[in-house]
Length: 169
Image (tube, rainbow, N blue to C red; front, top):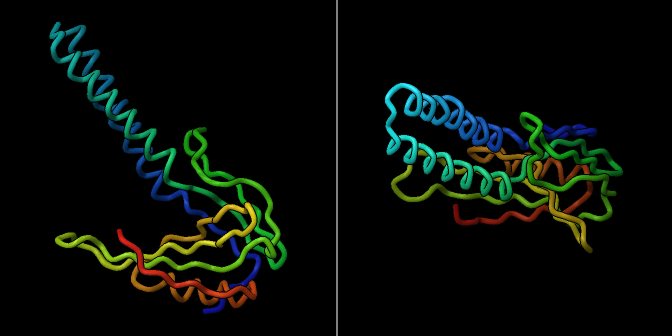
């Protein structure tokens, strides 16, 4: 299946799931637990433990938000227009702006096998590789070889070479 330009992409899905989990843990478990422990059971140890859970949840949530790119955009024959993803008004990590196609040197497909003893299969990340200060832009997260086909088709549409890499999970 050939890629038709303009091609729209959105890589914010996994980051959105993580952020919803963090917010759910905080507002469905921790906040009601703190209120119950303060107002009903008067258990200060439980309040302290729940505040530690909240601090750890916020810490790891911020790590995920800072390091997992979540962008949306459109690829045309001449440029890539990228907007940062947003979830509940929170800006996700990732580049922002309009980048001409000639500022990219390749379409990269990174294939990663899951760790040993983990249920799951091969998955891929498809990115446009920037040159001369242009950021790499994550275009898609795929599974079971779909990224290889997408990478080849996108590279053909943009007249760029394809880099296929095997990476660690």
